[in-house]
Structures are given as C-alpha cells and as structure tokens.
Image (cartoon, rainbow, N blue to C red; front, side, top):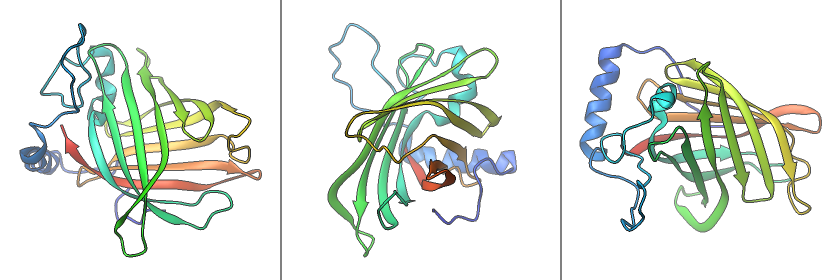
Length: 214
C-alpha cells in the first residue's frame, strides 16, 4: 500500500495548515470541473469559491470538495500488486449531497502512466444531523455498495460496508470493506480500502492525492 510518513487525520499546527492550503490555492483556486452551461439547474462544482453555496448540512464533509490526483497501490485478488494513477472528484450542486467519481489507470514499472483505463467508481456521499455518513458507490466491475460511517475528526472520515450486491459477472471473491479518507499534514488526501477476502480483512488499495481544483 502507499508508503507515507503521515497518517490521514494527523494533527497539524493550524497556522501551518492554512499557510500550505493558501500556497496550494495559488494554482487551484480558479479551476473547476467542466460545465456545459446550458442546463436550467446549477452545475456541479468542485470549487467552493465558484458555483452554488455548499449546503449547510455538508459542512462536516467540506474539506473533501475538490478534484484530487495522484498515485496508489492495489493488491486485487489473483493479481500481483500494481501501481495506479487516480483522479478523484468530490463535487456538489447546492443540495444536501456530494457527487463522487473515481477514475484510475495503470502505471508502468518506470512510473509513467499507461494507456490502460482501470476501475471506475461513481456515487454519492450524504450525512445527517448526527454526522452519520452514507456512501453509495457503483463499481465499474459489477458491484453496488452502501457504506456507513462518521467523521473521526475535522480532517478524517471512516466508513464500513453495510450492504454489497455483485452482478453475475462481478467480483464474487470481493467481500465487504472498510475505507478511511483523511487530509495529511501536507494537505494531500490519503485513503485506504481494506476488504474481506477469503474470510480475512486485508489491504486492497490505497492512494495519496494532491488537490488540482478548489
């Protein structure tokens, strides 16, 4: 899995965190997800400075909003461990929900991206007044999953599978899982996914991503 010196949610001097965020924003503050501009409703935004205001009910998830890119490691059943690139989008349209999209691609042994699209995920994050998180994910390889969780801090969120449904051609060996998302002291977004495989909870994939929008 991704080898980093920091764990998502690690404590950090608030002033240092603000300084790093401000420095990063010099290159990301004016960027946003593409907008066709011809729908009669607010467009999705991954930039809190642009588009509709974030719904008050989503404040506990506010730090996630943005477009994140980086690399990770995966150890899928029946495959050797491999490196992948990832783009992760958390966007909103002013309503009490966050849209979620993950796209991945294989990386070569020399660290260069391959023209080989990988797994995709799409779904929605929701959170109620008791800070109970609901995450609904559709996986491109034939699985639909519902996870529940809660914020561990203002910078970290943990979720566990409550229900999974696999299609006839989906990953039958892949069981329920647990995910941890968190901002590291350098303000990168780290995440870890563990899965129940052959009756044992094992590392499945993880990544460390930097903000490119927001």
